[in-house]
Length: 184
Image 1 (spheres, rainbow, N blue to C red):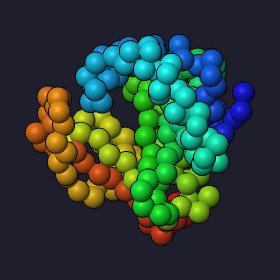
Image 2 (cartoon, rainbow, N blue to C red; image 1 turned 60 degrees about the horizontal axis):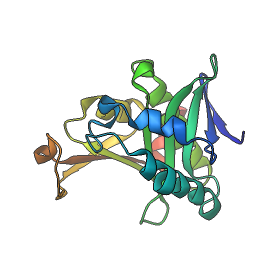
Image 3 (cartoon, helix red, strand yellow; image 1 turned 90 degrees about the vertical axis):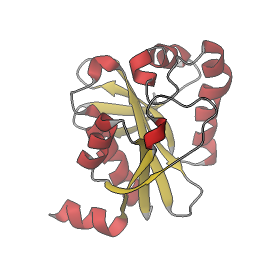
């Protein structure tokens, strides 16, 4: 197990080729997928596209990618956190997807804060995240993690989810703001 990061209550590790079942279980929960696709992700897509894509990022972008999160106390799979390159130089995107059974425990904020700190420790200039405007829980996590509201934007989707008409929101923090806040 290649551990990438530890927080007070979580261990983040690289996914392996044998982790498809964890992702299938996570993406099978309609509530977990509510603001993402609205439907479970098919096993074949996870095994043939999503998991191989996650593994490929590790080789192309050392220190970045999507990481399996496990509770330290129980060892149970809690979900994943991602720290990904974006199209903008010096900028990284952060995200997460957690099992419904661990919602409300503060793991989303804890893991996201740790990845933001890692991003800046590793030289990033800006960290961004986005979600549907109606996803108030994720928006709250972004704020608790130290990200700040930037904008509402609209994306045309072929098969829009309920709430899409309200747009997407972007949150971000730059290095100077993060460092100033971490000294406070």
